[in-house]
Structures are given as structure tokens and as C-alpha cells.
Image: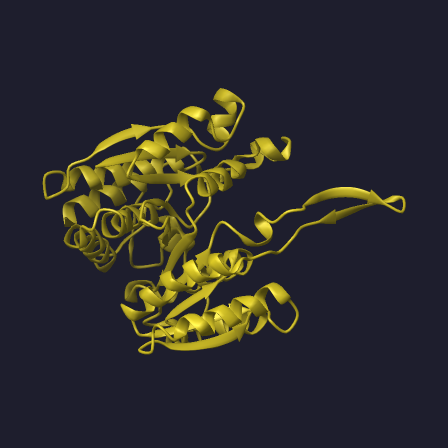
Length: 353
């Protein structure tokens, strides 16, 4: 099993190290793998001048799965847009056709007090957001900045084809079928024609999934409902831009974005797996970062790409044990728990395994 490892920037190398240690602890348990490490993001810009070098592209294409740390940081914010670290992420998603982004928002019982919402509102939260990742306004053409009537005008194009909507819809319905059989499709059909098509196609797809209850919600209402009554949702499906915003909002219901993994899959379940958080340059190199989202992303890799459900569950159960034992990095620390650093948290998960 070939894994392309992209540590990235900021805390990326630190959290990646712990995820790889956890995978090493499973080696031989039905799981044998080889790793090729490559550059992406700001570290790639520094070394090669581009955020997604040809060598990285080659390694990613040859791998069965990609495990990524984080990219970006203020160091590169003043570079031309095409050289910024985030362009590397967009490029790899597009090149590998990773159109389906799965972002779970799960609140572990031990972390209920870490959420900014009342425990009774979020206790037991378990949402899966399915975000379309290679279309929408992020990739639509035409785009740019031009001069009109003596002033600059910025423009982007929100566009979705029926086939793009159908393939992400199928992923979402299949996910809902394996969970609570409830799917909420989020759009803005009252204003945007592109999302009227989104709703129409979702309704058409639902005929193939009579066992899944389909509902619809406008994106502004969905943003409000995630805060008001988040447990009403099981699986949510939406476009690229709305999904970007809503998944970050949902992540904070759990108390820390440092706890949340994600998967970006192609049609054959080849995937890019990464924590939902950023590169946190303010704590990079200090051994303070929470590696659990990256470790849980590795568990998602075992589940979705390699079909190793038992090994994925071993990692997830180890994380639950560690939290139940009171281990906490700074982002989830509270009085009465045991504050640990990045490596100590990795040690604890390996011991729990």
C-alpha cells in the first residue's frame, strides 16, 4: 500500500510525525505500507518556487492514498497568487479529481465543555458534511480582475454541471444510507440559478434512495440551524463554497478544529486525507500542536481507501481511550485534565493501541 506523505507547513511536520508513528504501530496487523514524502505548499515554494512541484504530482499520482499535514502561513501571503501555498492544495485536488470532501463533526463526550455552546445543545453531536470539492465558484471560468469605466472590477463564476451534482449526490446518499438515513441538501435556490439546478438534481437522485429521507435548506438558514439545533442534522451535502464555510462552522461546535479529520475522494476512493485545521504557524516547532485530527485522518484513510475497517476502529477507539484518560493538548485543555504536548499525545495513542 503506497502512501504519499505531504507534511506541508507550520505544525504539519510535527502532527504528521505522530500520525506515521501510529500507522507504524499497526504495521503487520493486516496493514503493510510504504511511504514517499514530498513537498507541498510554502515549503515547496521555498525549495522549488512552486506550491505543487512536478515531483510531488508524480508521487501523488503513483500513490494509493495521500496523507497531508497543513499548508500556508503569513510568510507567503505577499507572494503572487499562483505561488501561494493554498494553490498547491487546489492543484492536487483538481489533478487527482478529488471531488468528494467528507468532514465529520463529532463531539466526544469528554470534550462537551470545550464547545462554546451549551453541553445539552451539542452533547452527542455526530454530523457528516459532504462537500463538492472541484467545481463551483472556486474553479469556475471566467474569473479575474479587470478595469471597467475607470475602476477595477473583480469577478468569479459559480457554475455546476448536472454530472458534477449527480456524482457528489450519490456519495452523500450512500453515506446517509450507512448512517441515520437522513440527508439535508444545502443550496441558495431562491437567488442562484446554479443551486436551483443543484436542488432539482438532488430530488431526481433521491428516487434511487427511497430509504433515505431528503430535506432541503437554504444556506443562510443552515448556518443558523447549525448553531441553534445542530443535532437535527445527520449528513449534509452542499457545494464547494457553502461547504467550505459550513464545515468550518460545524467543526467549532466540537470545541476544537484540532480534533477533526477529513477525506477528499475520487470516484474510486483514492483519497487525500488531512486534518481540518490550518498550519498554526504561531505554535509551529514548539511541540504544542494537537495531532489527533491527523491521526484520525489516517484512520479515515484505512477505512475509505484501504477498506481496513477493523484497523480504523482501533485508532478511533484508542483516541477515545486517551481522551477518557484525561490527556489534553492546549487547545482542548481544561482544569482537572492532563496537559500534554504533541509527542506525548502520540505516545498516549500508541499505548492505547
